[in-house]
Amino acid sequence: RTRVAVLISGTGVSAEIVVVISNRPGVQGLKRASLAGIQTRVVDHKLYGSRAEFDGTIDRVLEEFGVELVCLAGFMRILTGTFVKKWNGMMWWLLNIHPSLLPSFKGVNAQKQALQAGVRVAGCTVHFVAEEVDAGAIVVQEAVPVLGSDTEESLSDRIREAEHRAFPAALELVASGAVRLGEDGHIMWKSSSQS
Ligand code: 3YE
Image (tube, rainbow, N blue to C red; front, side, top):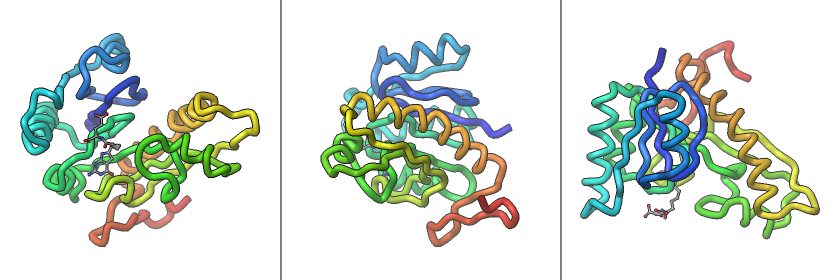
């Protein structure tokens, strides 16, 4: 089975995980991981003088745990090109979940952006991490309706439920080898697993 690490900044998500790493101490996702018997580490970005040192420390924790697949699940830091190149190469994989149907509404407050744009369909996207934020190859998307009565909170809740299905689905596709990142940065589907 593929050894998975999850990086969080808040509540995180559930999966088959060898370590959960947070850049914020004391967040709910760390408590949930501990309760589930999963090892946790805090790498507090505030204690590092540069992004390279912060990413270097995360890199060492991932190596220590023999991680093969890294999931960014509500992790709010931009990763350096060096880190992305190593972990999103041919040997290891780096996935992010974003609360919009990319390429719409990149960046922070995607749900608020969707409400302000007046779209009737929102959703989430699991993508391979490229150096450019929220621009990597898409693995899974799930759509949800936007209701006339929606607030940022109610829409975020609906999108989060979709995320809890989309992230495990994407993990399975990547860990099983059904889908991989091609040399050109595009998705490659193993023949017959196209869905
Ligand atoms: N890094 C790269 N490419 C990606 N990180 C994430 C996705 C992704 C990535 O596709 N290279 C907003 C982060 C956006 C932001 O400006 N963050 C600040 C810190 C803000 C805070 O700590 O609250 C920063 O300086 O990094 C994960 C999602 C990133 C979301």
